[in-house]
Length: 252
Image (tube, rainbow, N blue to C red):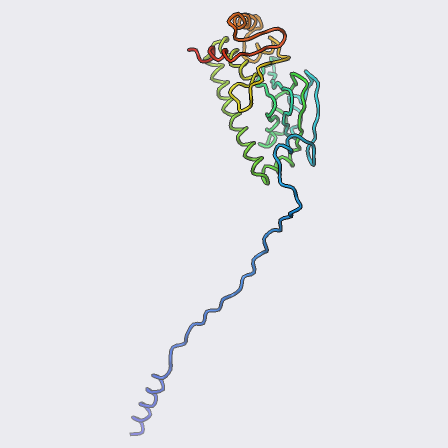
């Protein structure tokens, strides 16, 4: 009888015990405060940056036909053309020179240093009185990382430059000297760009045009006279390019 009562009391005690409940503790995680924005700091102005000197950049003027840098020089900055024009050329081991590009206002040069080039792959020479903004490599990298407006502008430029190089190669491989000359004159006059075409090309000799399109000066002279007779250009020291010259490029 005693054993039975003990058993029933044990069962009643066990039935009264409830399973333990899990307590959820919310821990407060401290997050770093948002970066403070200095209201006094002026907003980034892309055009002001490209038009003026400042930290890590300076404005320099060059005379016509003056070397900016030579093939094999250290590559430690990027340049932006504010005014004038620049010819890029390369020289082979045998001494043969070839013009690979001509650049004008709004173009960059020397950007190869951003891709790991330690020396210049070409020689840059001015074709007129030229004003350049020289941007040190570390400052160029900083602005590309921090200022989206600038990085968008530079990316658009590099993509357009790549397309231009491909078009130049196709032009050299498949088009006649006459069509190559017409296209080069239009590019020098900046037809097809967002800016208004300048129409007047100064300080570009027939020898330089021959180097650019891969032909002789005499052939350039022949086609220049032909273009002038047809009213495509006016040529008297300076070259005045008319929009009708497009018909030579578009004609199959």
